[in-house]
Each structure stands twice: as C-alpha cells, then as structure tokens.
Figure 1 (cartoon, rainbow, N blue to C red):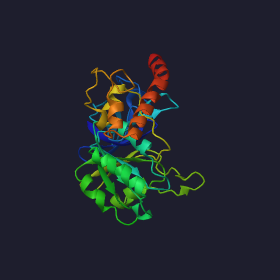
Figure 2 (tube, rainbow, N blue to C red):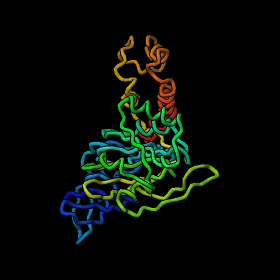
Figure 3 (cartoon, helix red, strand yellow):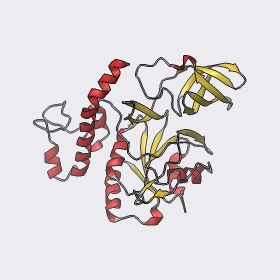
Figure 4 (cartoon, rainbow, N blue to C red):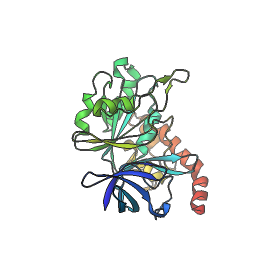
Length: 303
C-alpha cells in the first residue's frame, strides 16, 4: 500500500493512504535503503510503500522517489536534512521588523529549494514596510520571483490565489508569524509564540514539520529557524538559484563566477546589471560549501 507522510518524528510516522485513512507507521528494520545519507530518511510529503500489520498500523518498506524538496544542512549531524518533500512551491515567510528583514536569509532559503517554485511572502505589513525593504523585494520581483505583501493578523487573502491546488511548504525565521499565517489560512491551531525582545527574534513554536490539508490546497508547516544553512551540493546547483548569474557568457563555460580569469560578473556589477549585494551573498554561500566539504566527505566515508 502507498501513503503520504503527514509527519515523521523519531521514526514514528503518521501517513494518509489513498482512501484518506490515517496510519501509524514505522520503518521496517529502522533503516531505509537510500542512495544518499541524510539526517532523516522521511519527511512530511514523502510517499511511502508500507505493509499493514494491524488495523491502522504498519511497516514502511520503501520511500518513493521525490520530485521536489526543501532541505538544509544539519550542522550537528554534519549531513543534509530534508524538511519537506513532493511540494509544488515553498513560501519563504519574512517580516519587515521583529525579526528584521534579512535578504541573505532569503538568498539561502532560495538555494535550499529543489524542484519547487519559490514564493516570497512579507508578513506583518501592518507594522509598516521601510523603503529599503520595498526596494530589496522589488529587486527580487525584477528577477522573476513572485512577492506577496500581507498581514496574517488582518488579511492573509493576498496569498490565497497562489495556494490553490498546490502543496506549499512554509518556511521562515522564528517570529515572522509563519504559524499565525497558517492558522489564518487553515484554522489549524498551530501554536504561536511571542517575540524574544532581547534578541528581536521569535521563540520556536512548531517543533516538527506537519502536512495540513485545507480546502483545495495543502500546507506543510515547518519549525521556525534562526538560520538556514544551504545543504551540501554542487556549486553549479547554487549558481542555478541565482537567475541573474545564469547564462552569463564568460570566457570559460565552466565559470562559477568566483573571480576566475575572464569572468564577466565584475563588469556587469559596474554596469548596474547585477546587484553587488546579491553577488556577495552568492560568494558567501559558495564559501560555506568549501568550508564544510571536509566534514561532508568524512561523513560520507563513514556512511
């Protein structure tokens, strides 16, 4: 039988089969045979094959191929961690203040999306949006990203049209009002936390990813985070997450725009065609991959 994972916590899985029945599942033998090692073999949104043991319980024997995911680097375990799978889009929820808007957090989140469409959501717009925040988000619109301005507290409707018929993963820093937005859209009663004023960041309220069904759409709510570290992958994948850097004809086709001889990026920055802040963000992400590569390779050998 096949079912979709609603949530997975410490090897215990809630999943829904094609008839709508909820099952309590465990991984057979506690290990799935997978090509790559990850922190967690299963995440919300995964499709799994299982064998029923009794009414409502069973053993997972296989995870079906993922067509998309949102993942990050788990620093403690030194490996990639998939947060949500088989999603149509990822809504990156930000706030103009409390916590403050951070474009580099947004860039890292965009690089953590694989096979799904990004959607940039600025919540708490009732607090007012500074000019520099509007200008920054306008530059993402110019790159082709959809950007939505809303207030979960007063009117979450601007995002509704983007959700219809889709599975959307919601991600964001703690305190941006992500779970408040989910509550407003789904009446899901996800826990909501207050802001830790000392650090101007939010307290964690959602402690695991969970798939919640709405009327004609579904949402995967994920735990709020302080930071997102881009998962370990090839640098070319990071390049593909920066639309303004794709397709630049440098001297060498293999150019990753890291200062190679014949790279056209410096000229394009001087001409105002590429924003220097975005390029610096790109270089920081590539540098973080280089710094982690010995850990990643060592972990892979142990696995």
